[in-house]
Length: 388
Image 1 (cartoon, helix red, strand yellow):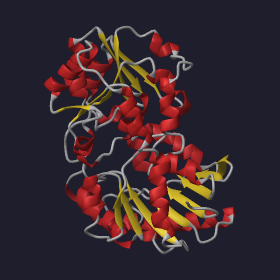
Image 2 (cartoon, rainbow, N blue to C red):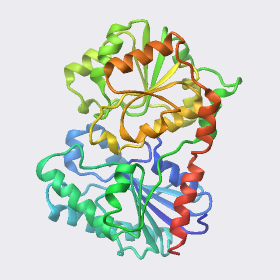
Image 3 (cartoon, rainbow, N blue to C red):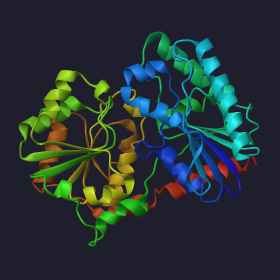
Image 4 (tube, rainbow, N blue to C red):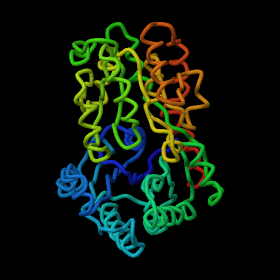
């Protein structure tokens, strides 16, 4: 276990977004270390494409501010545009980040920090921050949804980081198998769950949130972002045929990721309930009122890189789980139901709604207890300690 270290987490997510692996790392590491959490890096082009990024721009003016004891947050100011299309622009942005991080290190009085990096455009930071060790924690195939020059440059820039990092961690086997070709210190460590939080669904004292309780019909839950990875066409087709079923979305809907007509048609269905972002600690009260949990991803090269965080969280609740057949979930098929297409997905939903298929809640909870963040981060900390 790491103790009394200064740790800098370079994230791909703002602190205020839904809780992901990088947030979990910051919260747990700060129990015994000092941690600076650096949020999303973005430029003017992102503000144009994603107007909600303006709130991150506003946060960048706040300076370094405390989240809790031993944990600080800093949202970076605008970087140079075009960094995914030009190595020169990316190099300039990395120099800017290096300069800024050095200032933040000095302000916090950090010494010889451990760098825990989730952002792929960071090769230019390795060995430049006075760090003891530089860990690249890869949670996605960042170029998988891109084409042409952009895809090539993203791959080249990320490869630079993979080769330079002291340690590389991949959350899926596909990521691990690719990265290990370029760095011998590459390890496969998948996602996990805050099992203590999500198993509260089992408690009789846990009340059901009224927002969910008032929704009619058999309730299917989707937790997390509704984004480009989500097979909204499949969901639209299924729920339009089953008005007696309700789809409950907890988490943001990334509207830019979808065809406007398809999104409007889907969200316009009377049995689609978009409840929006909810505080992490309140999720058990929503999940307890649902009947089945969904992982309705497209099956492609991008989603085959994913280790769905929601799978481990769902498992801790003991609720039935239905997912599409992405690679990373196939080894867990004894804990969930996997469908290869829309027909199978709908059939599984119907069987669970009718009580034909049963789930073993205790078996799922036991699995979740063996796949906690404490266990996962403990493994990573052991790798880091070898460099200290």
